[in-house]
Length: 504
Image 1 (cartoon, rainbow, N blue to C red):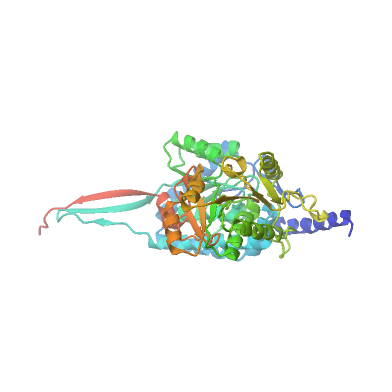
Image 2 (cartoon, rainbow, N blue to C red):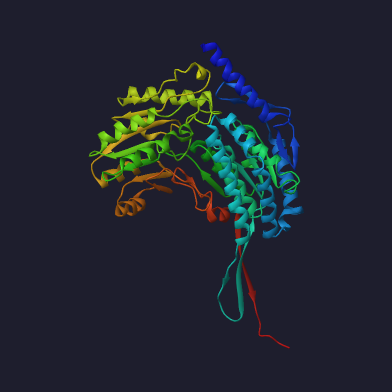
């Protein structure tokens, strides 16, 4: 097959998939239970062929105002009066609608982000599992009675904020939306959610599938840019709580803006997560874990294992195995089931990764493999980069300290437990960390010593809705997931009831 025909074949395949995914769909804002068109639109692109999938509405301050007003109307008119069992029933009904469209949602996610279709389907299922967790947790919320004396009845109430503002990132659109919406709705809030302008399609479709199930205005989706849409949302005086996932720099701005009207914030920000390979580790196991941790989702994941720290006694063999493993990834069309790595999501991210590969070599790190675009002519128009492995890396190099958000692995060595901990914690981030060892003693000691909100042992993941997810230091404030996330969407009230002796 010639280069031209290869390129034409993949373009035709993706054009057909795009038509199936978007046919008769209006990807506009979703406000007050219906599609809400705006004058301005932005295009979302398929990163495999760098062609437009569809155009999406861009919301401005007036549209944000309409969404916040619709959310308050829904909260005060109906949603605040629903009991936890009723909210749970409605959420499960919405979940059933989502389950009926798993293939459609997976295809949209695949096209919009470039994720392999198998990964996209797993992430749709993960989003649904998250919503199921909170639909169940909705019924288990309890208050507390505090023992005092016979003349006082003291108890607590947990009450929703009312309307919350939520901003999700471009790398895990549907899963991140579920992380935000699940606890917020279960706690009794209404949501105004801004997805990324780059990858908004599945979030909009999720909201559309709530039609005639959730009351109008409970979920509002306002696509657009951070400046035009996100800014007015977090600055809005009637948004009582803000949850943001994204970069540290934007998170700082969100926190400052929310502080202007004393709205509490949950921030899930960046990471530069270490995976520590101790000398007793099973190398086959930890090579797989470290590779999964940096090459899953093409490295565009905040808790990626982007720094491997390996004991000097096993470093040579580990590096040899890891480089071989990196070369095994199948870069290809994400629509093909056998593809294990898709493109980066955008040209901007491709340029960022390419710049870091150059920076690493300029500063003396050794590029063991990767960094080039694949030679397959079918992939020539996509934002592909071969998996990267750097060795001879120091902790003062930018590739070892800055979040790259791509398939770039750095490998460093250590000689003692103390040195490993010092290297691992020598970062401004603290989202995740990994431990590779067969020693229970090392596992528990290292888990205590690592400055990270998540610790994975001998694996990368899993991420379950049952446990809180969030980081230390500049990786964020508060938690997504788990029962703890419910607390971030509720306010606690203490009620003192003074009692007299009963009289007849």
